[in-house]
Length: 182
Image (tube, rainbow, N blue to C red; front, side, top):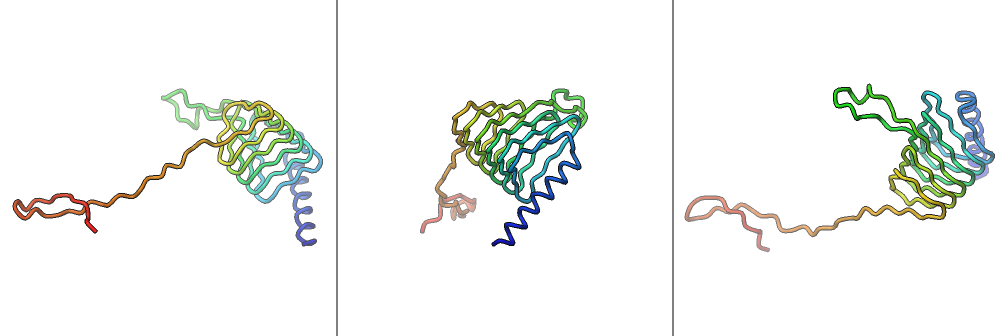
């Protein structure tokens, strides 16, 4: 167990140094930042990321930044959380999507937030302090402080019905669909 803790601590330290070398003045990381494998940051243009003290990112989280992403202190992120401070432009039907560029915005997350697994946070969103965002939510508008956000997609359950079987009508020879009797 001690060896695993030492490995994780070493992994985080090496990865932080790597991020600082690669992105120098583009990323600011607070004290006590920790993350698991698959943590990625992607920069383009003038993008800048600020992460506060004591934040934790679970497996496969990514921050994609062209504008600015700010994360307060003591935030936790579940597995597969994705943050995008930009979106593709698509308004000109005569121009290919890839050639229309991006709408660049920002994301600001307050202190002491818990973002559940598989959450996606889109551009121009501000999330207040002490917010809980449940798993599988798509965050496309701002969330006030002290709020719990839940995914409201319903599971629709439907009973399987008997499948109709073709039956030949002996008088006409035509095929009729009738339920299988059992």
